[in-house]
Length: 217
Image 1 (tube, rainbow, N blue to C red):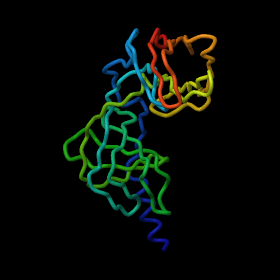
Image 2: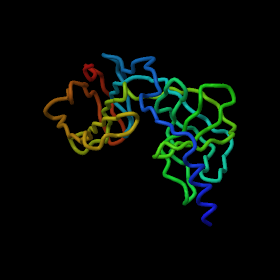
Image 3: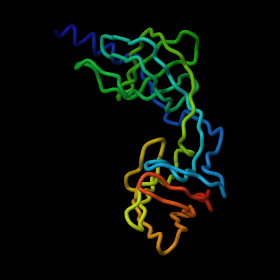
Image 4: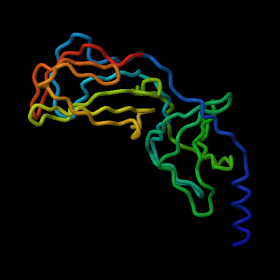
């Protein structure tokens, strides 16, 4: 048992890698929905107004599960989190470890042909495996890491409920979410954080509206 632990310890110390968290995407287009002045009908739960960016982010697609002595890497897509002069780094959500292994920090693939996929531990140790994978990219709405949206939640009497959501890197920011009610008997023009719409018709299931202004840049 002591010999096994010694071997494992040596394997864990081979190659010390510092993970770079400097992003893995480039903004390729702005998203602003709908067009100002456009008449739109939306259902309950639909986004009425959106402002953000379309980002092209790097992805490591592992095509076949890797069963390693210390770590197992499921067959799935892993989002790029950064890069340096030698490696591309990816998130490690889903990677599992042997009880003897250190916790996982990230995945790394060297910038060379037929490079192995390496699991980087929280201590910087690299454990590398031969793998069937592709380095690719995908489009993701993240709004430079930030997106704002208004959501229709339905009508009760003269009041409609509108939800406001903020997303950072495609994850909701709970502290910045809000639900607001508007009384249509007072005004059919409603707004939140600079976004403004004119409500033409609203029911329990759908709403028809015109965009006056989107969220400011």
